[in-house]
Image 1 (cartoon, one colour):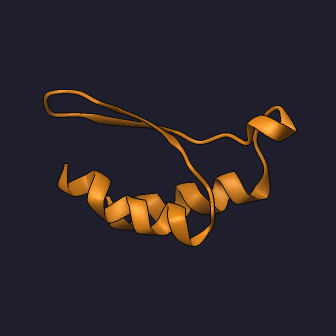
Image 2: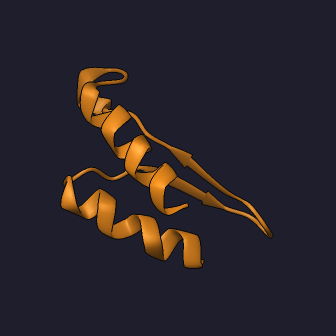
Length: 54
């Protein structure tokens, strides 16, 4: 949960809302722009930010 709490402000700052799947010892983050039907530059930027806090 700590990981999710660290990445949430990054997503909120970008007004981007990734899908999160939380399991016993794993968090899976799916980043895509549904309105664009795939990946955009914002998705890659959010992924970079998430990598930085994860």
